[in-house]
Amino acid sequence: MKKIPIHLLNSQTYCEYQIYLEYVKGIKVKPTLEINKGREIHNALEKEHKKKAKFKLSIIEAIKKSQKEKITLVGREIRLLAIICMDLLMRYISCLIRL
Image 1 (cartoon, rainbow, N blue to C red):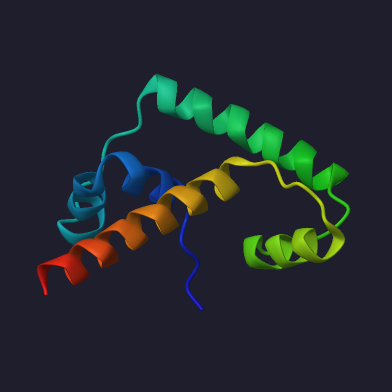
Image 2 (image 1 turned 90 degrees about the horizontal axis):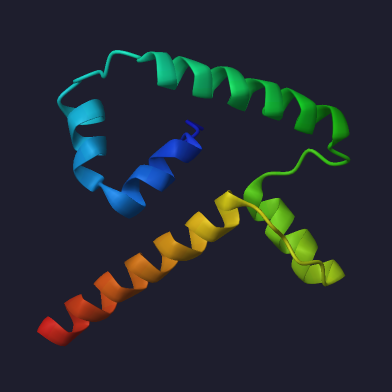
């Protein structure tokens, strides 16, 4: 199964055209100094997080575990999933209204 990078979920919430340009048209943005610095910081934070992580769960597994154990999840991935689900729901409702 091909994994979807989390930045695509974030891009989808504010600029779907960016995804089109990068993945359909193949236009790549040349990394700037700021992008490279951000990657370094992100990689360091991710490495530290992985050291501290108690479980290796997918987002869906984490959501199921949190529901079962009544745990509140915090993370940008959860927020983004909620935004995307709302967006899909609104598009679905919009399609139904047009019928």
